[in-house]
Image 1 (cartoon, rainbow, N blue to C red):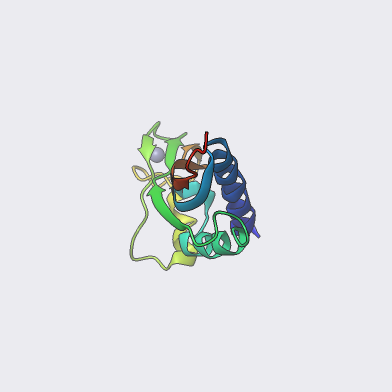
Image 2: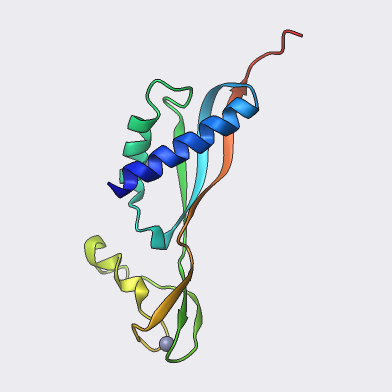
Length: 130
Ligand SMILES: [Zn+2]
């Protein structure tokens, strides 16, 4: 289950960052989600909710910013953002962006958008008693 392992990894990373900053509760986790992760944002948010149960992340708002994938075409040497035909149904559209937006060739290489990264976490920090 792709989305679940991604959600677990986001929870682990966010927890570590929270601990390092003496956070008592995480309220918002902002992430950038690359198009070529083929992760469905709604599924990720759902799995994040499950994976964060009983941690200080429970109830946190997962805010997902979608980032376009980048392609390099071997046929016409195009390099840049992939494009998705918005009319395609989602189950087909996730494969469509692999095509070169310039010449339509399928001999493309992915050059970006394969990752998801946590950009920022909003948390409540414990009052220092010292
Ligand atoms: Zn091309």
